[in-house]
Image (cartoon, helix red, strand yellow):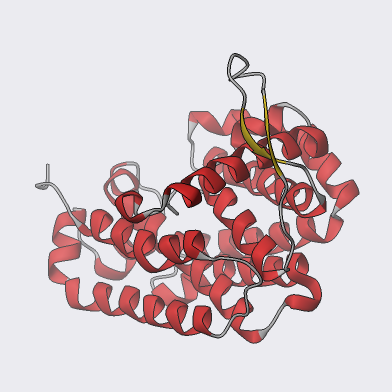
Length: 282
């Protein structure tokens, strides 16, 4: 994941903030036990959100206990205990991080060399959940082929990432997977891809790297691209938000879902508005 999925902090209840951090710390420990210690460095709060969402849809409660970790060893903090779902999500996070760094390497980014840190973790993830690695590899390859062809159709360019999230949700949710959960995760995958394209617009243009928004609009500056195509961009994002709301209202949750509602209904639109704001063209 990319770190774009965030809550609207001023509207986040204290209990949900505690849960969010506990899920993050619990997932970190789960990655260590499932994929090795190096793989823990790739964790973002995106996956903590996914953990809260998947646990709730699967009607799985989490046990939270205060304990220490290697980084915060002085004071005990609330940490969600490891379970099968967090181990699975840890495997997904590790494989996603590995292929993201492979993509960075193909783009000429120096940080692409860090992919070697996760090779052992990916092998361990394949042993535990080979289907997950197969889904991510297949859709990542489709994404690379589209980008190599210079695709300038926004919906088409988003499809592999969206489909990957949809299929991963089917695997993670099992019998609890429904058309609405699949649609929600599809929307989240599409949103993350577009958010990344917006965020990296100027950097991709400068380094002559693929960016579907640049290919679609042809503006050498993000500010110009947003200003001249603002109506279309807001329509794309508003359509995604409307579908997310509709899907969310049809999903049956076992426990309180204030945390995931805050992120989906408030945090994601807030992040989008932030990404649409631009400085002057250099």
